[in-house]
Amino acid sequence: MRLSDTRHETQLLDQLTLFLRQRVRDQVGTADAGGTEGRLAELRTLRELQLGHAEARAHPERRRSVIARFRRLALRHRRHPDFDASWVIDSPDTVVTDALELLVEHERVDLAGAAALLTSYAEEQRTDLVEVAAQLVALHGPAARPVDETALRPA
Image 1 (tube, one colour):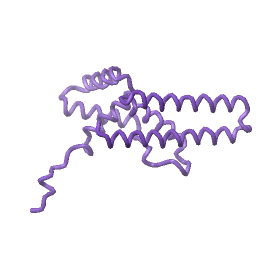
Image 2: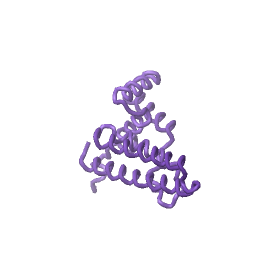
Image 3: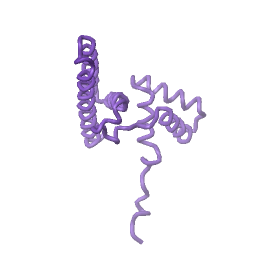
Image 4: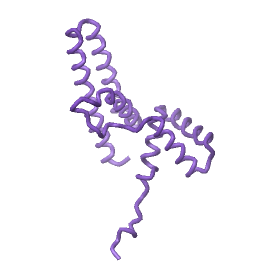
């Protein structure tokens, strides 16, 4: 992974964490002035965010999985004015379908073989299947294919 990718992921993780912490505090503030149950829910959610953030820092290979989890949490608040549209992710079904199509095309395996490859890799990496699929699509999808530089040169 390049240094700029790592910086971008770290920034994104920090932005999502801050946004989600603020939304938790907003929700508790509107629920009966918090109360005991509201405060416990706030503490549990904040602890989940803290553990996810610590996991991403301690295990860089899991950072993308944590970011995907936080993005899904942030989607619950997509109507909030502070929500950044770049946090939206494709639906999990679309991402997995795209990844399977890429595997069938590039690895020349049938659909069942592609599904087995994707699943075994996710288990091996101890990460979310959707996150593995998103990484595959990001690395090898149509937008990630290299541009033919000879076509860009002036004649």
